[in-house]
Image 1 (cartoon, rainbow, N blue to C red):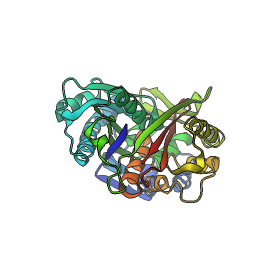
Image 2: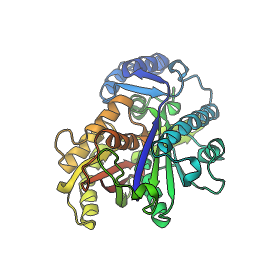
Image 3: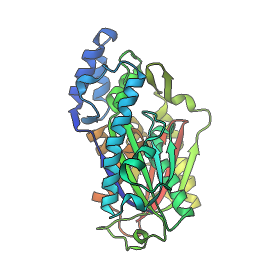
Length: 358
């Protein structure tokens, strides 16, 4: 089973972090006890730029959850179609070649789901199998690949597709003055990513892989749920929409739990951390990335691709680790035979790890 390609799509509205912060301060100034605290929080997010689906001056003007969710559907279809087309074009496939679609998002809801609507828009087979996923949050990019890999393991002559679309800006709440929300307003951005997964007996999987044409194998995956931690991250959902739950304890949990999770997973595959040539990790934020580095004892720049994604786009929730994967495919592929680890963490609290070989 192989990761054949990654396509990404971002909204046309891209702003420096300082511009976004100032706009949010103006909208929330009368509601904030200390407006200038937003500057400090946003300066510490490690973000220089973010894409936002709709113009910055529209933030806070959506009247209710229904209105913002309708905009999410519109944006998800637009970005989703673009990301899918790019992923398919890279490997010279068409929608009819895909046997299963996995769709994930945690920033909006739709029924029929976004994947169903894209089947009609893009000409996928009417018999394509669909699996919409909600609620996994930031871990869903890695977990989505794992579930798609489970599918092509069972059907080795077929191709599967994962689509992630996250429009985090539509979840911002003008009346939420919590510290978690103020941090989220400075951390999360909008974007989409699509991944083509190839079963082992497909034509793409049979092609020789190389640094010029990388197509890494997925050797194994590991899902881990950490008991009694569901209070650390997620949504409180009410009439205004999605209200962020984001505990300051998340980095410490990552630091204390990640190494044992990784070592256990690698031991099952007769490997150790020292044999992993690169780490393709979700861009969760500066404190989370630092916790990952500390927990695993990684050398400087080991997570440079993750830091770069955070700096240039912010945290894209489930799409973040997929943009990091794209960076590796295009700019940092491993030498043939070497191992990489892909990983993300998210609500519940949980982690998803994938062992790759180039």
